[in-house]
Length: 72
Image 1: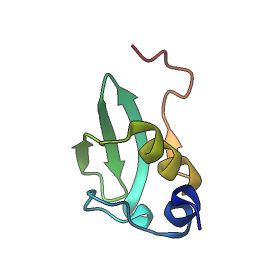
Image 2: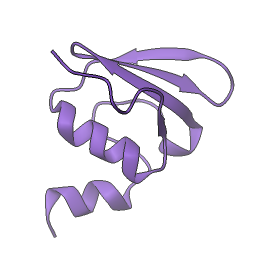
Image 3: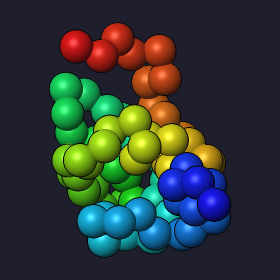
Image 4: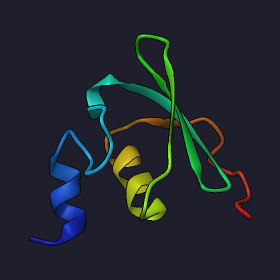
């Protein structure tokens, strides 16, 4: 099984303490993900592999607040 497929099948992401079912929306800027949880709490996360983490969020249908944002 590929790394990507394994991440698609799991509710958790390595190094991130929240399960996908607790997440509501996210935005990514510079190298930090700002994530709104379903309970209203906001958390920040720096992923070692930003593309893999972003893919995991999208796979779990977590809404990207600004999908067309230009990344610097």
